[in-house]
Length: 286
Ligand SMILES: Nc1ncnc2c1ncn2[C@@H]1O[C@H](COP(=O)(O)OP(=O)(O)OP(=O)(O)O)[C@@H](O)[C@H]1O
Ligand SMILES: [Mg+2]
Image (tube, rainbow, N blue to C red; front, side, top):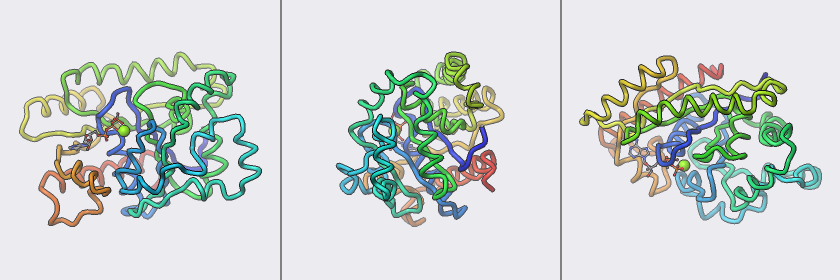
């Protein structure tokens, strides 16, 4: 499909691998290094992790224009009657990108989508991005749920480009294999709908995260990953305490001064910069 604005979906059917952290850092690098207008969409559940990452969780509580409404039957009515609806949805992260936060209606929206005819079920988010966001933003970054629900499928349809962070762990080999199988299964299950709309979801980048230089497990994981995904394996993001500590303060690595960072933090920041440049190339954004 020919897209009116660039889109990337951070997705894998696995929790705690660095999806939210990676989405936030890539969106921020795209905004500050490449001078792009970027918006992050938090569709990853109700925890509002992206708002926490940017220290604005108190501001986004109880939004008067929740993102979940986009998936509901009343959406057209809302758009017709509230002309500044998108202004009301969007928050400034203070680091470059804008954020449309998660809200408590997302799991209900996922349930309701099950009764929408399959031809329309997965296209709600794509329409919202085209109609409401495309003329404001150069890049839309989606943080998706770590499971294949109707919301995640909306994100995959809307973006086509899937970015998958993975970290070393007990089941790393399985993760690598199942990632490929998951996208293949989506293409098979929804082949007719995908073809009808000329949508081709594919893996654009795999980002190895929480990579510790000191452990054999990390080394083997990165080697495996580069072998399994030679075309899309990105730079390894170092395991760094700085990331969690800064998140607790509501900042990314890009908002920290050099003297606040360990070597691991500097290396992780550099890897996110490089991965962002590679991804933007892939999205033909530079
Ligand atoms: N490079 C890193 N080094 C150290 N810790 C990291 C790194 N990247 C992420 N983390 C930490 O790992 C945890 C999980 O990261 P994150 O929340 O980004 O994963 P996720 O895939 O979005 O998880 P969920 O499935 O819960 O949404 C967080 O506590 C985060 O601070
Ligand atoms: Mg997350």
